[in-house]
Structures are given as structure tokens and as C-alpha cells.
Amino acid sequence: MHVTVTTADITGEPIENAALVGEEMDRWLRDTEGFEGFLLLAAEGKAVGLAFWASREVAERHNHARSQFRERMLSIAGVRIEDVEGYEVVYSRLDGGLGT
Image (cartoon, rainbow, N blue to C red):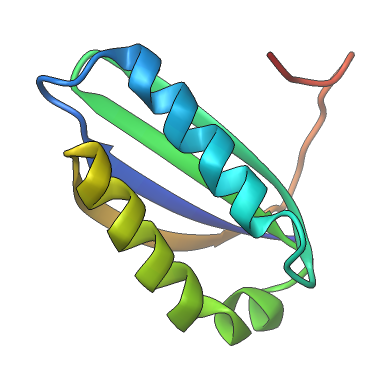
């Protein structure tokens, strides 16, 4: 599994807005081939989005469309992307699942 991690500066924006952006990102990505899920973490002034993909190849295949959508969504929300990086999941354990 591959994860694309996007960090954004959300200074001046209420954390509640991050949930709306997360829901929209998930809704848009949900039907994309190889998309496995989305997790958004937020703290005062910073948000970190994790998009989970079946493989690095799948993530890269959809990179252009994802980048355009991500830039458009975050600019509408009034936040600035700081960094986008890819990681391989080498270990995971989640009990009881996650969700809001």
C-alpha cells in the first residue's frame, strides 16, 4: 500500500473547515481505481491529509488529476499546501477502525 501525505498551512481557518475539505476529497477520490481511503488530521494552523492507494503505480497514474483537484480544493478553502510526499506502508495496525 502507498500513502500520499499532503501537509497544508491552515492558519486563520477554523479546524471545522478541515472536515468539510476532507469529506469533499474523499467523495471525489472514492470512485478512483486503486483508492483505498483517506484520513485527515488537523491541529491549530496545520492539516495533514493521507490518501491511501493500492500501490505507488496507481497513485502515480492518477497524480496529475489529483494534484489539480487538491490545488483547487485547498485554494477555495483558503489554505496553502506546504508539502506532498509519498510513502510505502511498511506496518499498520488499527483496532476498531477509524471514522467520525
